[in-house]
Image (cartoon, rainbow, N blue to C red):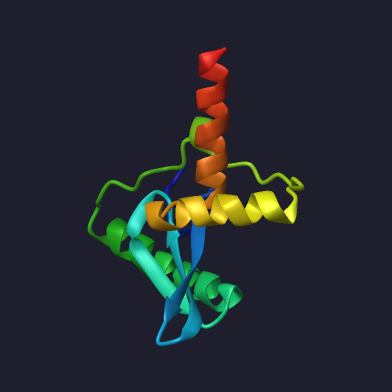
Length: 120
């Protein structure tokens, strides 16, 4: 199998997206979990995702041309999207707690759940 641009574009790489505050307005930043150097910003989440995908195509093209190693996604570490319900008061407390930690809700909830499992 030839590992060309199409091969890498078909892999299930995870995009991480985060809302930030910039100049008193919301901004979005996106990057690939396996390629932190591939980042993009946008005024909306969809704009940031679109831009980071374009940047990723250029990154992969360059890496192939230079014969550099390209990391493939690790299926064991692949994130799975779930839908949960949390009451508004609890969510507000979670957000206030994680804000200075600069981690996502998902990362915090995963870490907390795994720590609870390990305790029992």
